[in-house]
Amino acid sequence: MTKGTSSFGKRNDKTHTLCRRCGRKSYHIQKKKCSSCGYPCARKRRYNWSEKAIRRHTTGTGRLRYLKIVHRRFQNGFKEGTQPISKKKRKERKIARRQRKQAKPVTTTPQTT
Image (cartoon, rainbow, N blue to C red; front, side):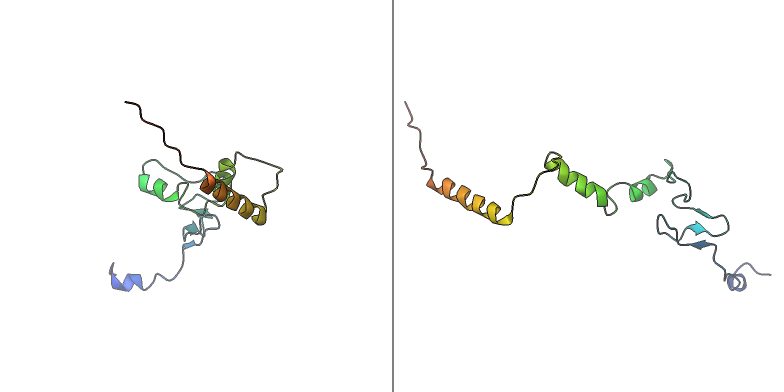
């Protein structure tokens, strides 16, 4: 029997299917384990001998659903229980600030020699 073309025709069964956790086609059906993320283990599969794989799966490569919110809250000092200023009031404040800026006279300091 040959090792090439005729053998490839017999490959019609799937060993891997889509993984629930990482979404890759790496979940081994018989072993019931994902070769990419290690699902159903609680810890994510990660090895230091593969730097590129770590880089591909690190923080910041996905949607950052929660971290986006944390970043926004950090910028505002993690305030809680306050109401945001309405758009109308915000616009009024912006106009007032602009008017104050224009009303300020520009003063120059006299130079002494």
